[in-house]
View 1 (cartoon, one colour):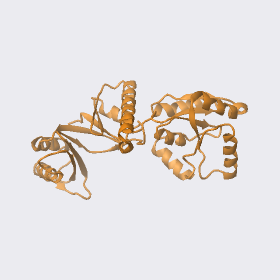
View 2: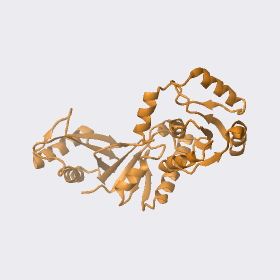
View 3: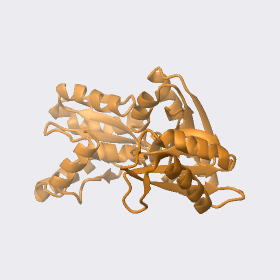
View 4: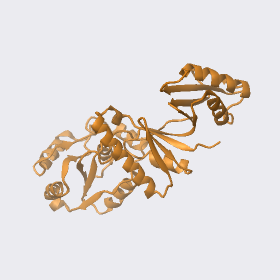
Length: 301
């Protein structure tokens, strides 16, 4: 039995005030639709109670795309039925029977929202007993071989085995533009990635022609089209001021970090500030090189 839809969760958006939350939800929804259409994925999108639901036959491809969209906390390919006990018993057994046997253990993690004539614990006991009876598998609540998550939301029930993490944060485009400096020493893109995770759209300024392809690779991987400006060393600082003005950048982001040569770094920041009357943001400043390398590897930069 194969999943027939994908649950999309967000976290930080849900903490916003009603109007802001609605605005950010709309931006995230538009981003999801635009990116899936760009990938030629046929889908239907529904939103209910703080969740987005994607119905598609291309579950694997869609999941791979969704986990790269800023604002998404996690996604789960899942199975759906109604919220009656009989329906839940049938689907639970169908989705788990090929994953367990008498030599494996399982646990049911049940969450429930809305009004029902049963509790989450009732569901776990009833469905768990049915699975044990039909498969002879063992229940192990602390260290199971298989976890089956069950979410009951009013009249619907969703079954899934994993929560695949996304980048989280805020939807791209929910905040202003920032200028990202890609200098000759190279740019790890992690600083820019963190600003994108805060909803900012980067505009890139680079000294080296060969870095343009690196920028395109990075932007394509995270599904957005970025403006890229190239200049030479002689015009670098003057161009910073021009780009900020022409593109409406509200800040400059650099990739300076804890292990850098601090005196030289401070001199460079002071010099840059002479040409840019906007805040300088340094997301990596308290990180060391080992952490940066680890995080970059984690998000495949």
